[in-house]
Image (tube, rainbow, N blue to C red):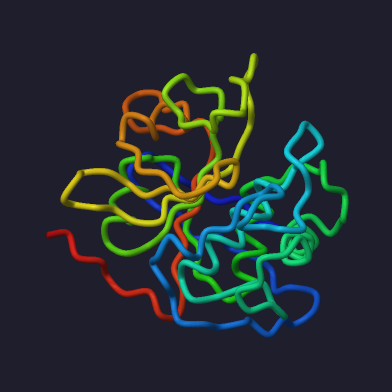
Length: 228
């Protein structure tokens, strides 16, 4: 069972998790903070055998879990960099225990799955604190609204007409442009966005308090990033 985590704006709370029912052997690789690690959620050159894009494609949570793990030098147990629907299906099983492609995922479930795969996870509802962690070398798995007016979309993807719950990963910060590189699995490639776009996506209130929990993810090889 997941013990309640106490959180306040501007602070992190480490997830207090029970040990997994079965011991998993994490798949470890060297972290590559490179756009080449990006895995989309739909059939495309980056995921040749993936599910088609459409309302039944619930791959954003599992794909974001894979992206977060690979960015910190880990992978879904049993995999090592594959670009297949199989790794997304395995991530979904790790998160939800089901193969239902429409099953939603929660940040609490994703935190358990990330830790089962060997990652260190802390939680926050402060976007400012989460982005500070990214500037120091962590990655940030966020939940948000893909229908936010300033959020990037593919040219062939009509704007959602209502709140569209979604998951994405803030991979790194680029000091030269003051922008963050985001791995949004609904897109064809990583995008650069600013803090205001991330605030709109996460539906921030009171300046920093995100509507949904954010997961700060670190791995065995995570090193502080340059802020120069």
